[in-house]
Length: 369
Image (cartoon, rainbow, N blue to C red; front, side, top):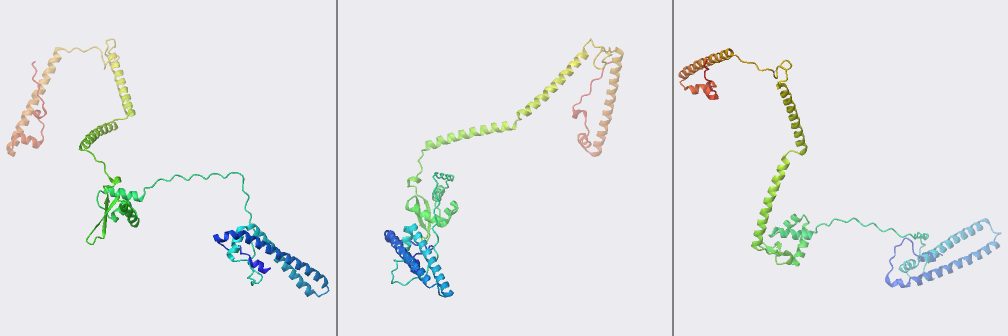
């Protein structure tokens, strides 16, 4: 029984089946199952014989009975293990056959028995498949297309319009220098970029765009097209400046809400003035008596000739006093100018005197009485 169990593969072994042995899997499985069934039948026959002998020797001592019972239990356990092996081999199919082929050919009765194998785990049944269709997997979110490093290198060299070395290209594209070196060699082989060795020993390399390559060619433009484009650009720039100035002027102006508030305030002021004018006109009308509103109207007072004469004489006296004081002030300025040895105008500036001439005031004529 131990020979049969040792010939079977261990369940934990990872076996790789070669292609040459894949055709013999079915034959090996059938041979193993046949041999195991024969061994199990022999064990059953042996067990029956021992039971018969056990009935004859029932008179023997208790030690013999215990020994016979122990042997029977061990044989029953071996028989159960062999039956489990047969079930595992029949369910496993080609996988069990491939493991046995990798472990070696089936053992013959002359071969020595190998070490006993570990306990075999029971076969795991696959879960039943559901009849409902599986849900479709959700589409992955669309990723933004990033610029390729090679495209960045070619674009940087084209924009430079001059020679560049590996360090300059790596700094411009923010890429690893080793990656830049590999990609540049590919572009040199495709003749998109030209390579030139410089230096005394010719160890330093510079790169520049190949103008003869179709991808790097620049469209030829006539001078007339350039002039036309320049004129159009100037006109558009002037129009842009005009529109910008209009926008700035509109932004600097007041908003409609502010203008509406100002208009409402002005209308209120005009309404108040019109109301006041109406009141004044009503007060100045001849129907209004002077007693009711003496300040705003009434009968005009008559001026007598005696009153007019006294008023004119009073004005003449005030004028004469003013001329007298002005003459005294002029004499004082002349005396100060002699003492300071300066001109009267300079003394007036030093003192800060305001004269009638500087202020443009004219003295009225004297009234005739």
